[in-house]
Length: 188
Image (cartoon, rainbow, N blue to C red):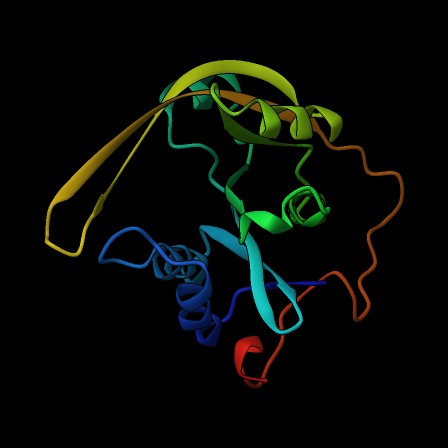
């Protein structure tokens, strides 16, 4: 498995393998935020296919309650592994660790993420990775379906935080998170 920073050519491949529920690609919106410097969009690849992703939002969670409780804490958002048969194989953990490494590289001392109150499996993963509850909040987002109907989504969440300890300087070689050039992984 390889984890890379999303490139423009990867967006169509992500849409092909890990689709969005609406008319607008979630992957394109995340990539656009990355291009504006607001986030870093990480993609996990296995045998040339995307199998997971997460977005590290440098400005933190959009929720005011979370921002007040932990100002300046970057947020790991939209962590997903697909297809579901690949879950519990370390892909999600690897994406979280890659996001943590990026936060450390930028001098951040903590990173957080939201977990749905009705998702105990994800909560258990985050606890094993060292995340601790900070505050409950309500997540809200919307999307437009293929018929032009806007769907408003509301979810009860808990924001979790992990304090990042930097034991030694992070050095990158040709592994872990890297920006690549050339063709999209899905077309190699």
